[in-house]
Image (cartoon, rainbow, N blue to C red; front, side, top):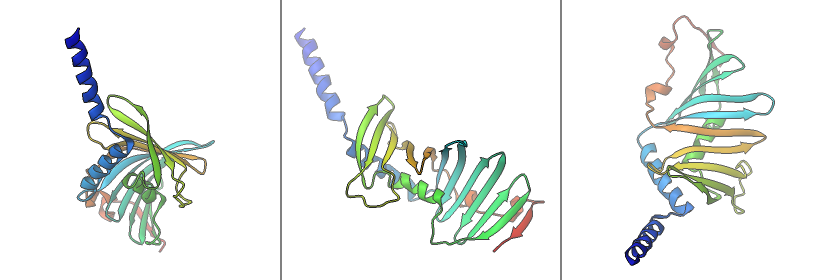
Length: 208
């Protein structure tokens, strides 16, 4: 019995030694994210739940200053490319690509949302709300010192235990629930670069 008690005490101490605080988990996640971001682009699925309209999902890829987004809105399939001051909107059903001029200094909502993964907890107080054998569930509450009006009050971040990569990040802004999930890093410059040759037979309308 004494040996069993000693073993249980040893195991308890070992588990305690490996327990991590929310801050330690986030610091490790940021470390891993920086390693990926330095050499590769980012891909993710973004869900937007809008009251009365339902949930819309989009596939977003980013590499450097370029971005590609593909989504379905009310039965219309859209593919959008962004590069600097130029935006290409491909209306698949109409077989029309509209080229628009945009303010390169102003980030799109998709770009801003993707940045949330890169600095997910900056300006937030983080705590562990739940834990499973595969992930930590972190609750992020806006710090009193955070004066950025555009930052949501609360966010829910799920981090994988095996890789320390974020599994999902959810928040609610202006009544819209946004969830970013399925993070990936296998993005190349070709994946986000618009090439007219890739869309033969499609009408090009230059609105710049």
